[in-house]
Length: 233
Ligand code: G3P
Ligand code: MG
Image (cartoon, rainbow, N blue to C red; front, top):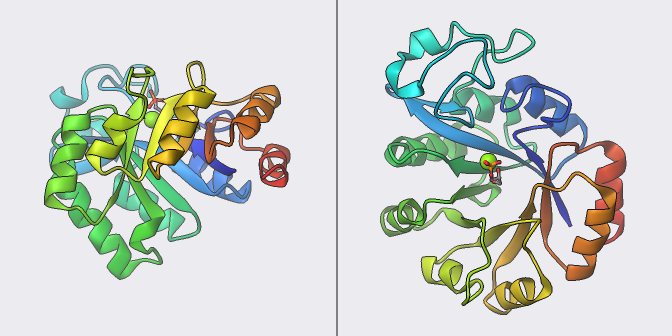
């Protein structure tokens, strides 16, 4: 079972910062999940459209310049990082799940990932691009079909994982509160990996291992949790 650090090791360090990402790598995770927005011509790693919750600033990303955004503290003196800064830091040491939170990110994202594979220590199979916005994923698949996509869902559709198969997804990412055996078995029968968010309790890991899921997103990827997940493959 893969362990994916949710927003980096965000239970210990400020979410979606270089500090949280480095901490996750030290904890020997398989992958890091980050959230992506765009400000001017920069891809930035932050969860919300508003900066109020995770920085000492206020306002909407779309009302800020990149220079203004970078003046704010995202916790422990960290700046909101760019995607390129995050990729340079990781440099192929683990896989990366990039969750698209905005619809103006696609072209820049593809060129940035292409550059990362050319100039850094990544190969393209280390990236999964996910979103709750399936229109965006469809668009990505049509224009740059070589990248792996992950279809996010906060619901358990009547036709289970059929939507993800139709999108040509590599994986389906589902909420721990609603995942069940029928969904996991259906996704696997369609050749899809199943990654479950957000799992911070060992008891839940036991249940998910029994369901045969392929990975979990967690805010607390301690060495012990990583060991538990890996030992119960
Ligand atoms: O990608 C899994 C999870 O991060 C999706 O929800 O709101 O935490 O980005 P959210
Ligand atoms: Mg996310």
